[in-house]
Length: 176
Image 1 (cartoon, helix red, strand yellow):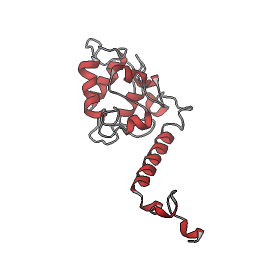
Image 2: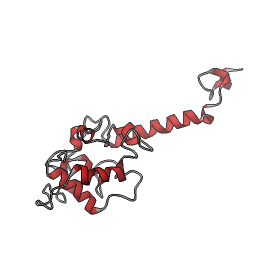
Image 3: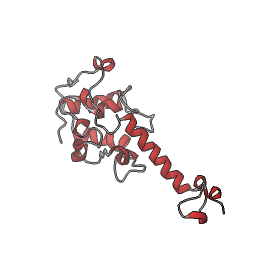
Image 4: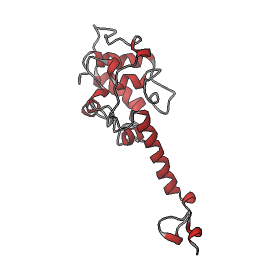
C-alpha cells in the first residue's frame, strides 16, 4: 500500500478504520472542541478573567439584600435550586457532568460551591457581593461572559429564584 493510501487511517496502521468513521474519535474530538470553546469563552486559561460586572450591566446590579428581614438558607432555599437546575452538569453524579469536567465547578455540597471551579475559583461566590459572584452572573439574563446557565435551558431560573441566590450571597453566603 502506498503512503498516500494510509492517510485517514488510525494510529494502528492499515488495520483500523478511517479517522472520519471512528465514533470514539468523533466523540473525543467533540469533547475537545467543547472544552476549547469553554476555555475561550471563560477568558482563555482563566488568567485574564475578572468576575466583575462590566459597565453595561454594572448599574443594573445592586449588592443589597432585597429582603433584609428574611434569611435565605443554603440548605432550605439554595440546594433545591442547584438540584433542579445545576447538578445534572455540575456534579460527579450528574447525567451529563460537562460543567464539572470543563469548568471544574461542583455544586453538590456547600464546601464545593464555596471552593468554586477551575476558572473563577472562590470568585464564583463572593460573600456580600452577589454582583461580583460568577454564579449570579451566569444565571442572569445577560451574563457578561459565556453562555447563560443552565446550558440546556430554557427553562432558566425564574427571577425570584435568581433573587434568592443573590440574597443568599448578599447575606454572606452562609452554610445555614
